[in-house]
Image (cartoon, rainbow, N blue to C red):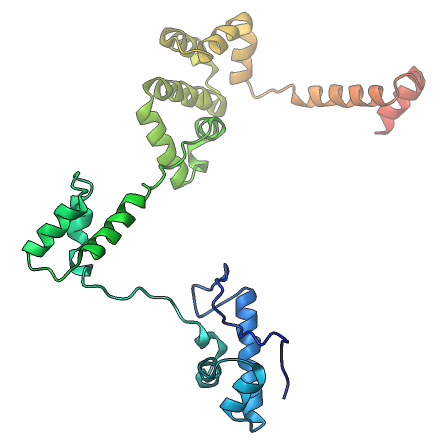
Length: 273
């Protein structure tokens, strides 16, 4: 008969394994692999005609361990959950958990109240449960959104936002009236860009200037330095994007050939690319 290990330690020993499966339908991890191998080994030895006691004696396992593997049809059935045992204090835990946040933290007083109500509990039961309430930490509040997230919510088109993004933006704007006002100006400017409404640009600049919002007001007033060009860009269908792209391409070629060739080679490179 084979022995899978020289130590004779059963695969489900008393050591705590961090990857204990939470669902019998799909257990995983090193412990699951050990149980799978042990289950297959026990059933293989049973098929060869060995008795359960002989298997336990040869493998160095306890008889109960071998019986558990032998009686399990599937290796997943060998997992046992550590369910808490029922306690006589269970019917009264809700009252203790209600009294504790109210300031009644004295174990002696709480125990006396339960005894007066004919509760079959001991002082040690109440003390142990109150100790768990004292050690319980309040749940951490959700992390606030980052500046980058809020900026993306404000500058992206509303139709591209998910339900979670809309809920986060709504909460942020409700907490900050200044940001809510800035979001309105950003939406108005986005409509000008999308619908080519350059004629309303002066009115938008006046509204932003009146709001006195840092950053946004400076951007709006800076547009006055070349108002005609900005208005034309927000109104006409013509764009200088293709020309600027060609200029950037020429600059890139020039930097690649800097100090190694003259104008004639640069001209050929531009014409060929």
